[in-house]
Image (spheres, rainbow, N blue to C red):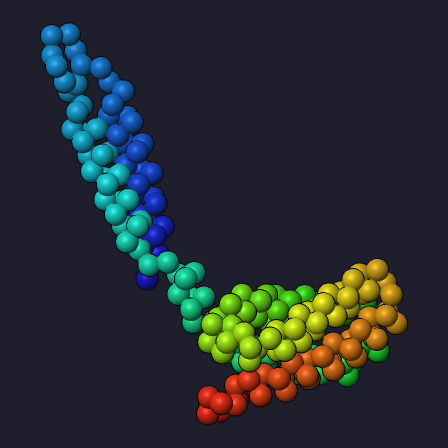
Length: 187
């Protein structure tokens, strides 16, 4: 299987080059058009075909994002095992290992969750979700403190903040269940 987007870009670029080459020769004296006008025309047609293929090709990244997009409930549920693992092992981990855990939490869970806040509010209403959003923000702040402490080499502070983050996200999970319990969806 070939990448249609890449083929379109290559044809578009090649068409521009061919059209440029065809346009460089001036017509001979006494004639109106150059004798390699057909090369210019072929380059223009190749450019148009390449542009159409390029623009009509499906965007693979957009398809991957929609497939991997998780709901807020799934993100909050899936963050719990990683936080539990970090909480159990934080005493034995070095600061750089704690940073890796936090980077995973940020990239795979907190950033997507942050992007879903507007959807949470529009789906459930601000009145129902205000306490949940505050708890999520608090948990994010504590995770950022873990990262900062680990980055500065303060292992004891990172351990304390990990315990606090673990408790904060347990509370977030309880609040999430309370907000979503009216949907009759399995958790």
